[in-house]
Figure (cartoon, each protein chain N blue to C red):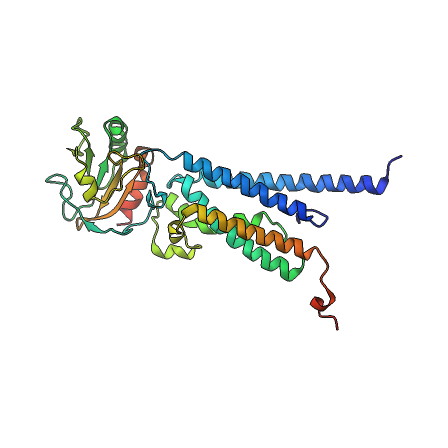
Length: 153
Length: 174
């Protein structure tokens, strides 16, 4: 005989996983499109820098928002993509014939981040650290807080 | 959308971190391996897209009697004999609003109105601040000179012929 609640939960989990996969595929497709948009620059290097920088900044903000709201952020895959778009915006201008200028560092350090010691390897490690931080926050908020942390007297 | 309808488990979170660490690390590794011998060992200095990256600007040495001239921007291409045909075709079609010189390690055929110069010892490339390619040998790339005869942009670029609009962008930024 079928255990109805357990069966419904499995179906619900599968549906959620499929939905997540679709979002992941969409995010990957967007990132591939951004990679291919680098007509004016060497995408192998520039895409990585701006992805790691933009996604790291987004993950830090996501961690703060998740911690304050006590739940995961909505649309978690959109945030890193938005961060990436901000960081690479001068490259979009470059593809339209506008060369880089120093003030474009306002876009998450667009120029100077390339010259970080260790280059993209360093940004990769920064990205992994911020990802770990965000995931640690998620792991923390799924546990109930002690009464003292909730302000109970 | 949240990640799942149920709270993520600790193992699930670690799995997400590991998948992204391995996936992006592998891509980074592949990108590093894909760099060719003519690329700059420091990718941050290849096609940076910004003028006056240190040590620039520097005075531009004469390539020929007519390049560079005061009052006219110039582009000095550095290429190999094997790449000369492709570059020449691109330059002819590209209609750059600047005087053009093409420097090769050995004397080559003519290329429209571009001045052709042989530089077997690579002295011109060094003067124009082109860096040594990762695999050694003569650099392949270009330098942009402003109307005051200063080198404002210099980069290795083994595929210049495929994206000459980038040269136009840097000329427009002078």
